[in-house]
Amino acid sequence: MSLESVRQFFSDRAPDIEIIELNQSTATVALAAAAHNVAPGQIAKTLSLKVKDAVILVVAKGDARLDNKKLKSTFGAKARMLSTDEVVTWTGHPVGGVCPFGLENPLAVYCDVSLKDYDEVLPAAGAIHSAVRLSPQRLAELTDAEWVDVCQ
Image 1 (spheres, rainbow, N blue to C red):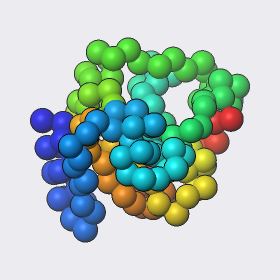
Image 2: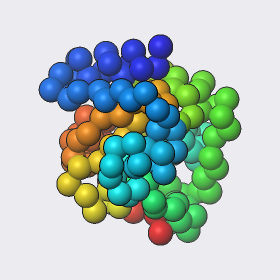
Image 3: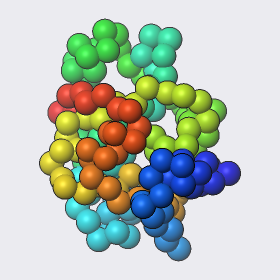
């Protein structure tokens, strides 16, 4: 179901982007980087956070770590990671396949500037064995994301 919502998203908004489906899991940054033969930083991880009463998504390079001070400064409050169940409920995607495409609920998407370290990044595509390849700029454009600096 989740992969299908992502397929529909790309069919509607970017039919030129192909979803890559592999036979092995790409549910972690390390697994995804090995499977796609790229640096861990090129894996664009999508983090599901709750800030005040809002759920947001932050997409960052795979080897980046969130900086709590920057998060609080940027969003005006402390952020907490969603539980596995909350992630599925809000995004419609399983943990390991979470991406900012084809979401169950409309959520604000933020792209961390760390993504700009690469010409091409690979976010998941709604399943633990799927991804897409695109530029960080295209990722931000397709998801109406705002650029932020919230990683170390």
